[in-house]
Length: 137
Image (cartoon, rainbow, N blue to C red; front, side, top):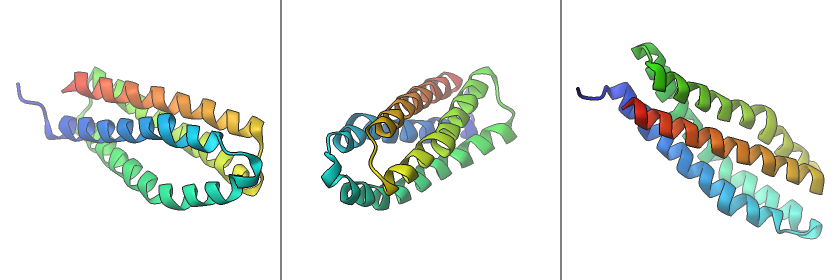
């Protein structure tokens, strides 16, 4: 049986999302976390300007793929992928984005650590989404 276009699109979008998320988790955020308070504001502002278009593109593609999968009538693994994608999106919208907003106004080591914990959870959600999308294909 050939995989559906919606399943392939979900797999591609979830793989892109996982690659992006792992880059953020393993490269970008650790580099930000290494900064001292004196260098924080300029680096965080530059990070926010640069990453926002990428976040919008990656999440837009993931939303389109998830929407198409829902319309196609998801099977069990696709539902797991959809729930994991939604979890990553919710963690971003209600965890990471507000933390970034607050960190943009003032540096805080505890808030930075909270952001890193949220980010690890997003990485797990992105991995679950990609594996489930793969299994759905």
